[in-house]
Image (cartoon, rainbow, N blue to C red; front, side, top):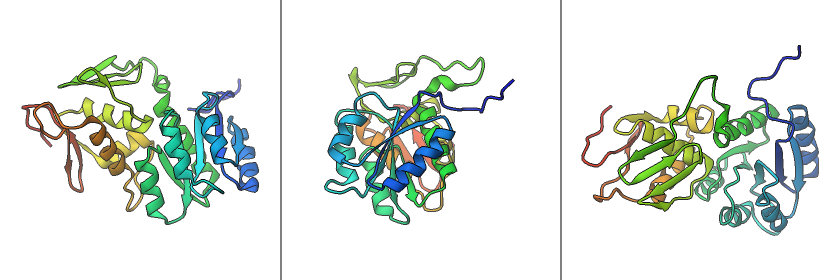
Length: 248
């Protein structure tokens, strides 16, 4: 009997790489093929938006540096029409690029040059967030979470505030779910990183903070004007309940 790799993608898992480096595209394509992924490459940023939003791909790898149009412009245009997960490829040590990408709606980032194994690990972690059916045997997520005027339908991956839909990326949805499940209690940054990003935080890693900031802005204040998500500096975040004090 052939062993099945845990969390292995199906043969139909398709990834779009948006990068003008032909050699990188070939190397990444060969490595991902061995891991069960199908990779297509696109060098033109304008065409990349249409291809990524077509529904033919489960994830997009997007380089910041593209000829003619920047990866940020591509991401901005893509997020106007699609919630496809996006993993940004940035120059090593360029914190500004990472933060800008996350603020524009990227799910995670990876610095060049990168280890192919880490690339696969990041892709799988993101896909687990967008394909929640991969839970363990007998595990059953509740169909609905509700705190004050915010309701989350887990299976349908829908978020509503006072009945109005709220558009969240895959990581933002995962963060909100984690925080709402623990509403009234602090969730530590490291736990949020493992649960939403599928990895531990790196030194000086602000990705979780940026994602939480985006969720906070999209949800707005509570009906009573209070802040929904409060920060405990150097510890984590707390999703508050109207009229109920939080606890550590």
